Image (tube, rainbow, N blue to C red; front, top):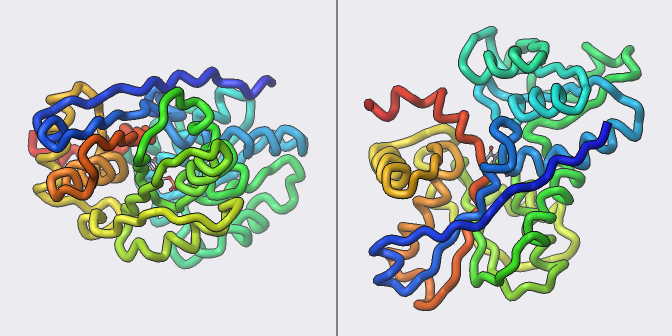
Length: 297
Ligand SMILES: *Cc1c(COP(=O)(O)O)cnc(C)c1O
């Protein structure tokens, strides 16, 4: 099976009064348009992982995630599309929700394990599938060197140069790939990571392990809104306004926090007038389904 998925990820400028006043040109790279389910960075992260699975003659993808994991869903859909079986090992007690419904619809088997057991993923893999030579381990969130390689290709697609590139960070794999891409293409671009978890400083280490060489980048750790999956009224009203004004869907777990950071930094004159800023829309809009109640619409 050919693992090619043609990449459609145009760059769209976002125009508004704030960016006009500050003399900024802000654009969004629409990785969310790559695929309706295998969206954004999840396709880029899976591409070379699936290639390796195929080379090693594995036809069963086994991966890990929380009950709302975009990575689980992307893996389920990619497995279905490219002819693999898939199993998702889910953290916590058995539940049903929209994400897991879509995982199952794509043929993914789900195994729920308690939080204690979930900590040791290689052990879980061996326990359930150690005897099956066709099974292939994919780490939580697709964190891997192959994942970073796939994400670096995003930079090869750019036809213009930017002063800043921003991206939301969970495991840091996507950030590492983008930084490697900037380096490889010798771009004068400053990379800006927005951790979506609390105490985001830990991401430096996660990112650095996948970098091809030492490099400076900015970590904006003040935009976690209380931690992973946490929100507040400011973030929710920002997202409502952004979606209603641009027609581009974003969600509170990743892209909402990253874009909030750009708007906030712009308002605080963080950027030099004339700066060109590219935000990566890393997809994940299905995450909205798990957070409908936060919006009170
Ligand atoms: C998973 C995800 C991220 C985080 O990617 P990492 O490589 O884990 O840092 C960012 N944005 C969206 C929409 C995601 O689904």
